[in-house]
Image (cartoon, rainbow, N blue to C red):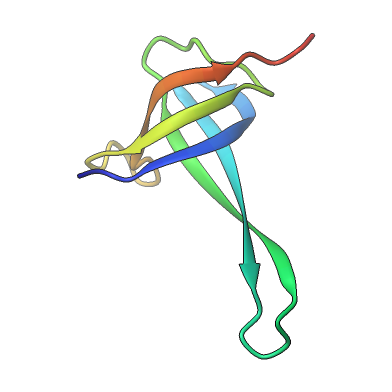
Length: 81
């Protein structure tokens, strides 16, 4: 079973590559305070259908390049213009 992550496209400047950021809440082990943890993913978008601001579903895959290890499954919500 491959990992799936929902995130927001923050960059669409590269060809067939999108930068997606995923945000989760984590609890500090000592101080018990919740904080936002952000992770950047480099995602392969073969048809170049996603744009900056879109909410997308991505899936883990084999290494495609030096940084790309994820691929776009579907666009959940299009960005408002």
